[in-house]
Length: 93
Image (spheres, rainbow, N blue to C red):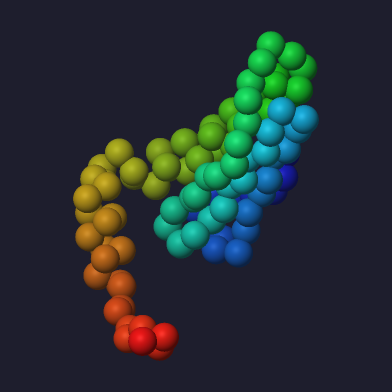
């Protein structure tokens, strides 16, 4: 597995790829975005991808638990994110 550190570096991402799909994890501020596509069947490539995803999720769960995520409601995060939004005039109008 790569040295991707969830939630810890805005410029960091990792793509997990096998013959059955590709999933990317990307740090963005205080969040990790996950995107991609995979189809799991009963074969070694699916098992390989599932194990890599399991490891990545385990690292995220560990970070969240160590940083008190169970005490924070998502509405609080959304409110903080909205407070940091600055609207600008559309330069194309």
